[in-house]
Length: 274
Ligand code: YH5
Image (tube, rainbow, N blue to C red; front, side):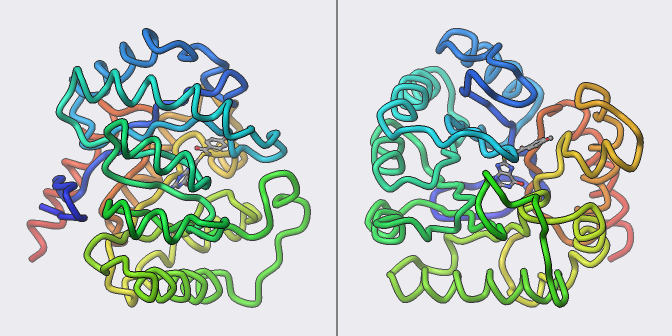
């Protein structure tokens, strides 16, 4: 078991992705109404997702920023409906303090922030709300981050950044036992950087915090396998298993059922090795 604030989940656990973005890269707006979002969440719950991650701002490379009112409109009704129909912990994928506050009021118990609480008011909001947080690394910003990512040593640079953000959280009053960290696959990283991070994920264990990994359907997998986005499930499963064998505790995934099965195998092997 893993405890992050009030969020108690198995280790490893699958975080199911619930996109409520009409322009979403892979779901193409199919789940852009509350009803469809709820149906998708129900499926993921039945498939043993441990958390549902609700996101209303697409952070795919080159995506447009979303106004706060629009993001609130997308995310809040879905979180309220989920809270009323399911016991699963709900995480909100946002960088905006206002969305964090509204989402937690609506029933979210975790903030998943690809900007690691660097936006104005985000650290204070997360501290006051007393929920779990995921701090993710990104180089640059979504519009331009894939143009020319550069690192001295990607694993060391990511670990250093995450260590600094953990320090900022603790200084702002967010206790360590509510924090998890994420190297941010695909966020300002070349394909080689992503592979190096996955191969050396263990080095992030030096920060002594649970590691969350999001590799599901991402372009590095497509590049390696020569697959379009809708054909990346097997590659995503392979990457998820490697991540767990290298110390990841939470896997953020679209294909919950397949990922849960794969992590059971990884888990059994890790257990047999103790
Ligand atoms: C993540 O890694 N990712 S949104 C592009 C794709 C496929 C998937 C081109 N939110 C993460 O899922 N939160 C996102 O193919 C995240 N970690 C955390 N904590 C991007 C995404 C995706 C982008």
